[in-house]
Amino acid sequence: MDEQSKVIIVGAGITGLSVAWRLAQNNVPFILIESSSRPGGQIRTLTQNGYVFETGPNTSSISNPEVIELFEYLSPDAEIEVASETAKKRLVLFKGHLKALPDGPISGVFTPLFTLRDKIKVLGEPFYRKGNNPYESVGKLAERRLGKSIVNYAVDPFVGGIYAGDPYKLTTKFALPKLYALEQTYGSFIKGAIRKMREPRTARDKLATKEVFSAQGGLETIVDALAEKVSRVGKIYFSSHIDHVEQLENSGWRVSFTTADGEKHVTEANYYVTTVRSDKLDAILPNSITPHLTPIQTLRYAPIWEVAVGFDHYKGDNTQSFGVLVPSVEKRNLLGILYPSDCFALRVPYDDSRLFTLFMGGERDYDKLKGKTEDEIIRIALDELYNIQSIPNSLDPSLVHLSFFEKAIPQYGPDSGERLNAIRFIEERFTGLFLAGAIRDGIGMAHRIKQGSDIGLAIVKKELY
Image (cartoon, rainbow, N blue to C red):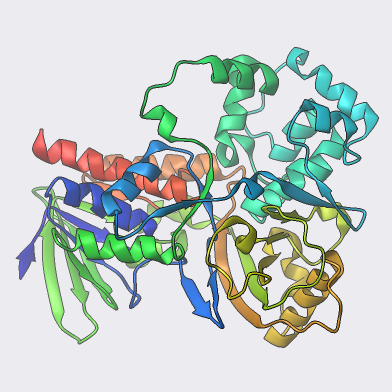
């Protein structure tokens, strides 16, 4: 053994770095092992031709106080950028045209997106009996309480934008637990939302404003600043791979790994935290755990193509908003379009430039697109963008960048209960082990920050108190 630490973390994505943040804050030494040459995982910001764009996650919401606390820790090396008022407006593609998603009761009454029958159905929502199926899908639950047209033009595109998934294959209890809790706790979405608004909130609770956020200069500034700052307390090894892991008889963990220069390391620690994808777990866990991993490794991931498109001098539909949600019933080749330059500053080279981010594939459209070349994917994306945004064919893009993620977004379906039970069983049986990452607790960046923070603080409490 050549070194000791309190904690070994595998994976320098936002989850692993958030664990390290809380450990570093409390001077608890750690070792973080990352297989790639950089921090951040799927989070990456590129700058090309004067455009600043993301090639992974684009935004998140300030859905918990930990997001603000993290930025306070990182300031001034990374500064939060809250989206402009424009981001409050969301567009939906409806019969080939852009329509605003209702943002209140009045616009909900007059919107063409929903049928009269379903508008009336919503009025009765507070009085419907609550469901008793814990595995009810998002689509079934929303259809039961709100109506089919609302599923088609609000719930389906919303789920497509977050999970790139099918609302009838995602289980509400796991995919949208807050929505599930509203019905189960209060008997109604509407009554529950009103009650929640009236509940007293602490000063810390009020930090969670639900606003959309990025970071000044792009999301990669967050992970770069985190990696630099936490490394003052712990050690981060990039371009390294794990050779062997074992749990010690007297509690604790021993990990052997090799760094980029071929140097072998053996380290021991009280805690072992994994943050990798489910299909990578068996390579970084002892053989004794492998038989228990099956329910975790059956987790499905939606594949995503992401296309950033910029126009130096844009001509086309210039409706300002967060972006466009594309419902399944529209039969298009897009999940949605984001408008980053509408929401965040300094993302484009000129005042009349515009930046779009297109998302394709997912559970919905992967079969239609698989096997196509990169040029074919880009052509399909541009055809859709030009059509939806009414861009003249004579206008050529100044930026086109394609990214592909084969396993992008976990799908929290009906097998999630079995997966979570397996995680709990393993963590209880193997003392000091934490199985973290998007295999549980939500898929968004804010979820990952909170999960990492919770794990880090749990370790700190055990070590210091």
